[in-house]
Image (cartoon, rainbow, N blue to C red; front, side):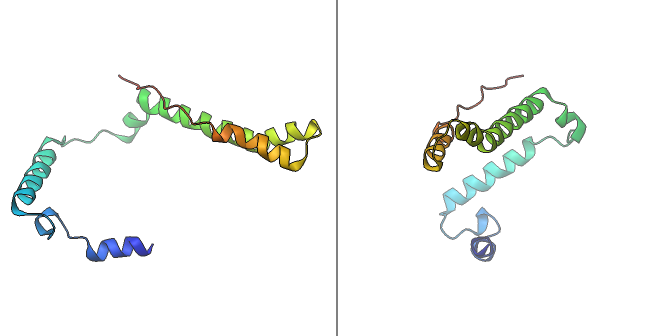
Length: 111
């Protein structure tokens, strides 16, 4: 929270007021930002159209599956290990294995 307040206090309003940029960098950056603003569409899609997009639905399903799997692993897996008669330390060590495996990123969901 303190960092957020410091950023609000000391960060300039835009690149044209940034003291650490030289004049060439400042003009390039302001021109680039103006060009990007001009390219943005003037009509925003509706919320329902965004939500019903198949890529958004796929990302939501992937996230829900990830959260569900994580909850199952953290709640039920220790109970399953306990039924085998393992000690608390052994259960903790075994239960940490799935969380230590890096998750692969979802494939690109091209339209």
